[in-house]
Length: 571
Image (cartoon, rainbow, N blue to C red):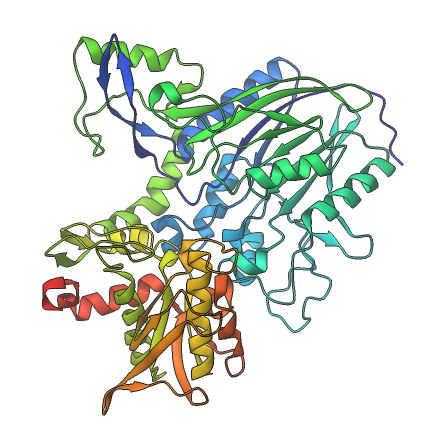
């Protein structure tokens, strides 16, 4: 047993939900300078700026003889072409270069199942915390075993606690453990033999076990979301600090530069401080925490800092700089802003990006695959103007690609949330598709299923999206189809809302879907697992087949071969 009897001073830096945003991106500000409103763009964030700021914070902590920790609260995967191209390899190398001390697992790390986590663990030089991920029944036949990894800190089924890490600070110990969304099966593609346990119950048991081991200074690295963190703080006593992610909350007041003021930095609930630092590598949070001998926090002070370049620009291209007296005063305002750091890029990390990754990304950004004759609108739930122009095409591309691979599918279903943007008139590049329209690298699968379950899946997805008789998980579940047509009658009883369900047959045209007849469909692996109202798809024959093709792969291949499909005027 460890006996604690010393006070501890700690400086902690944190980021979350970086989603492969290694390069800076343009951020538009809203400033009022001497009564005049201006809306300049700045270069914001990026890993090279984070690296510079972390080195500064670490040096400052050393001068003040404070222990330093740098944490990532999950969701480094997905988001940009860097993930579409390199599937986690670049994420591991860039996080290693940043000098992360530890990270908790996010839901997007599991979008493609457990295999990418195994590859990620092979590459990272820091521990990955997943304290409510139960690997005790992991299938021994897997080629990508996780339960035997010494850099993965998961759930101890025997004791119903998280495995934790202890950090020694001048002979005194701090315990850190990680928790992620316990409904991971609902929102990610975690393998079915490795479920997530209840986060709050795991936290209660873990805190008791840590305290029984003689440690009273406890930090939770969380990917539960801001409201989830607050709920946990109310329910669990003994955690000093929760470093959170998932909901992209940028704590602190940035309203004077045009950003939303969501919450104060370091909200304190039940003697637990809660911090979160936005998303997309735009900011870094840091705080100084002083612990008394008994583990209570005697001092807490910190903030989030938006990391920006020095230039104020006319537009998001960042090519043309604002000049004049107002621009000069705006620059001064940002320089002296408490929550903004004018930050240079770290040359070592920038060289890593330039040498290994940027050239391949630029090539995709310059590869034009089609020219769009008009804007194509994306909306999740149809409105008075109609539905999404794009999701039906994406669904069609699944059918196209699966048929090309020899799977002979009859129909496709895709959820509206799988598409993240509209498309604007003009040249369309590979980067527009894989980096903006379909940035999530989720594989496509095929399955055989009876007509009655197709009907149930469509109704369940729309019920979920519209909160019709159920508490839905969001509008993203709304279904769009290829080779299927139907009518949804919202006022009818549950189970009877889909009418006129028909499937297109090349020989006979549109024919009624028969309840007991088997049809071959294609959807994303996410939808095939019955997420967000699609439960009936799990009634497929067997488990279906998951291919190596992503959503973007299918769409790009179809548009290359049939660019005219982007012309809405052709019907």
